[in-house]
Length: 163
Image 1 (spheres, rainbow, N blue to C red):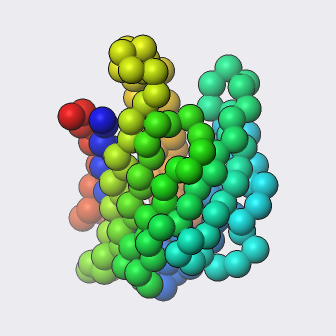
Image 2: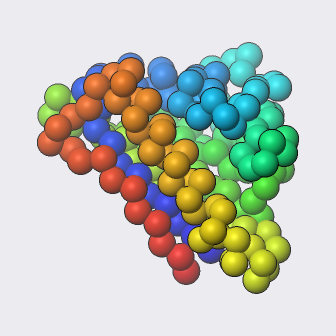
């Protein structure tokens, strides 16, 4: 099992952050273009518990991968959780938290994930998966900062752990 934690401060209101992050179509905006992110279904309504979102991504070697996500928990303007139901991971559980702070909000993400393939998946993690996740989350932080700005008193951090 692996865990990714990220923290970022944005100089926007809680309402503005929630509106942006809870619109599934905005995920394409904060995903690197080379990943070929394409939503197939599930963005017709505002985010709700039980929502299924289907999309295609091309994370490695131009190989298209279908990913199906379920929004399993939503607490208005506080947090939501998405879980992979079908896709490249054995487990993907992504918690998104928002918290008001001086001058804006703090956005915290915690992703618990497990790779398929047993020992081969573990061997692939430091070579292929971890560098790609770091790249994607750094891109996302940079993109959000370019759209909204950043709070100087909240350093953007990215931390990985394995269990």
